[in-house]
Image 1 (tube, helix red, strand yellow):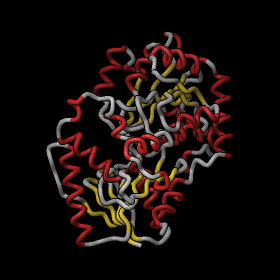
Image 2: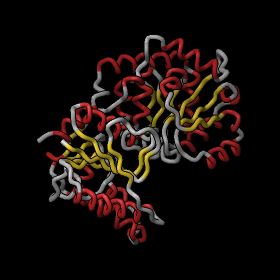
Image 3: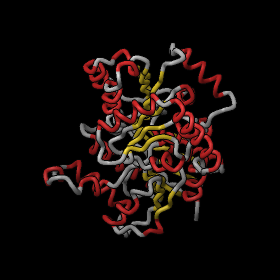
Length: 370
């Protein structure tokens, strides 16, 4: 079978991009041809992938997206495939991987001014093309929270939704030599025996709540703050957050490490993952931490936050968000070594029994089904 995978941009450190790659590789492993349409591709192209770069430009993202859709539609008409799989909302898809939440629900509480202009029209129309009751697109869901919203706004038949388990890469699990790897990383970063490493992981610093994390670090009692460092890993522009850290007087306690391919080392070497996101459809970083035995402090708006609660692998902050509560929880978790050891053990135990890994296989089953 010839498969076309559609996504606007590929870069190695995005959650959507990693999911796409693992699903496409699984389909290729099963003997199917993979063609990819991208505006840009950053990184190595896997052997056997046919990459078609879409040569369109525009001043606005929504105009560029529409040009991408038009170009790809014309190219597929000239050179058709057996199945079209999209990782962004657009018309003409046989299968859609629902990494983004419901746009209609997001805009429902906005004023009428936000509904004017091309941006609103584009995102509304592309979402409707996928979820309208008359469409035939099969929908791969990674968040139980979002499905009722799509059904409420579009009347999408329930049988078109296929809920996937998480797809945590096995290399995130704690290996047998985890203790040695932890010691190695901490030595590399000059950590003393009593020093604490807090990790913030993920591209899109604003959405992930990095501003909240910096404020919480600054609010720690002085004796605790003096031995705590925040490591930030993700592909984004750090300038605004570096300025915030300087303003808060904690610049020397924060390191921005960019996007990295050696994330498992940091999951083993840190003492806590902080993830106070404003909104998050899933939150793969939460489960990567869980299976590595790293305790998690997270807001309940993240789709995968319930796994942290079920595993008792950290603390989940309720909505509405309160900065004072985050500040207090961070201090309590860092001060309580025994609690962190318990959360770590609980996470490792949960990782042995729960299906947190088979998303690519289940997604390929749906894509390739008759």
